[in-house]
Length: 155
Image 1 (cartoon, one colour):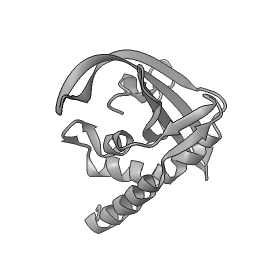
Image 2 (spheres, rainbow, N blue to C red; image 1 turned 60 degrees about the horizontal axis):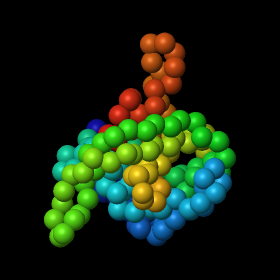
Image 3 (cartoon, one colour; image 1 turned 90 degrees about the vertical axis):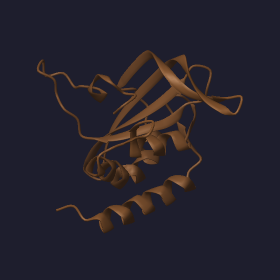
């Protein structure tokens, strides 16, 4: 049985840790990757105003502390995706959805005997930022690794 108190404590610790981060240098890009509210929101919400399952949030929040280390040690890109998606932006004091080119970069690492994927997102014309951390992953029927189940904007 999942205990709400344990989840709340883990969530608070992860949020405090995340808020202490601003950016981390990534050797692959040879530039900084930012930690903004979009990444933390994505861990808690599947889409705007659609909360993730508590177990899914808990699993990601519990591993969040590994994220900066994965980014700092990433010299090789393991996955890449380029899509066109509707992106929420604030324009003239209101929220709008605009079609943008989105780039997702995947880095995989095994730290502390835990295999994780860290996803970095870049909206065309903007800086790169942390998007998600995903523990383990599934294999498709053809025995190929599935990156974000084909929907990195949701995973």
